[in-house]
Length: 124
Image 1 (spheres, helix red, strand yellow):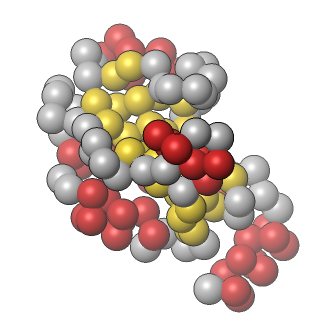
Image 2 (cartoon, rainbow, N blue to C red; image 1 turned 90 degrees about the vertical axis):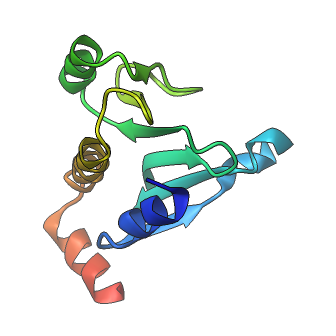
């Protein structure tokens, strides 16, 4: 997996936008690329150091990932109860990383009403 393939995968999902919002806090965060659905983050990566993917999750899924994989860690500056960092090139196959990203997208998207989602689909 490389950063270009990963980015293409994320932005291909309905209504996904991308930003690099954290540079305003510190210059060292300029390379953090965040993927959003309706202005809510579901996933982010460091473009300069593409060695992990941080995804939104549920507390139950976070615990399951921690039990079943050694290639996970606490996310930087995010609540470890609802976010998990998936370290690439470890014991999590790329296809599973993509599945966790898709799941993160679904978790955030599920918080919106059908009316808002209909409008989202009209805009794209």
